[in-house]
Amino acid sequence: MPKFFSQSIIKKKMPPKRKPRKVETETIKLRKKEGAKENANIKIKKGALHRALKVPQDYTFKKSQIARLDKIETGKTFTFLGNKFKMTDLMKDRVSLAHTMMGWKK
Image (cartoon, one colour):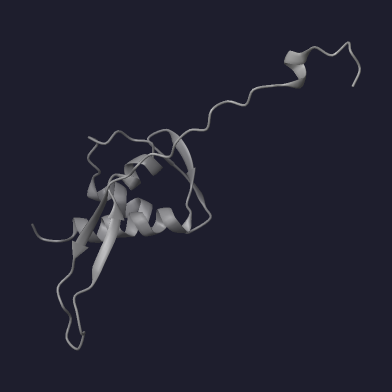
């Protein structure tokens, strides 16, 4: 190696790796259907749709907004509150789950 290269250029320090966020998961227990051996459980990440759509955790979705998002096909681009997004399979699943859960009686 030629001597005119400084050691700082050769030995570049890599930035430290970011640790992934620990996301709290929640389990929803569904009622037992006829003919099923046991109850079905769904594990979801809390606030995943909020993070995917870049809205704060205290933001409350309206039923009409979720219904509009649920109609968008996978692979299409859309805007939500001024941000552009592409509808992926995972986002579609999260939106349809939110649409279903909004229809449940409290």
